[in-house]
Length: 197
Image 1 (tube, helix red, strand yellow):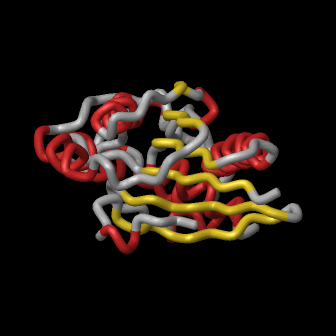
Image 2 (cartoon, one colour):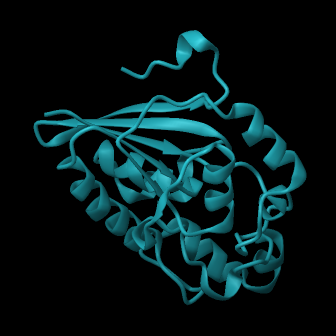
């Protein structure tokens, strides 16, 4: 049996435009317009999950999807840095930011480490591997990064070297105890690109 998981990154919101750690804010007008324009660009799926964050829930709704919120697919918890820009945090806590970016096991903000996020997402992917049919999940970019690290059995230090643009689809297909990865095609692809096999 081959498992297929489509990971859709949400449209942009004010936090992302301002380079802020996600504060749970909604999509902005531009992001909402882009996701509405992309509606209809996804194949049929057996089930839909969503990260509990506002951007993911709103993206799923604008795509016409009714998804089940899954706490294990939440974005990275950055503790007391939530809502602040990396520049602000870097000015106030330069050593902490340096450690955080260099050591995936470090969580100086009091939240969750990158390593913990990768482990959480890996556990959820293992559960999805046993489901028949195609699964779609609208998740934060850091969840897509963690899934890619897991799928390719990369060291967790690779996490920060992966970019996940808004409104892209990353596909995982699993068989025989391993995942294959098809990276980030735009959600608003041409009709020829919409069939994901």
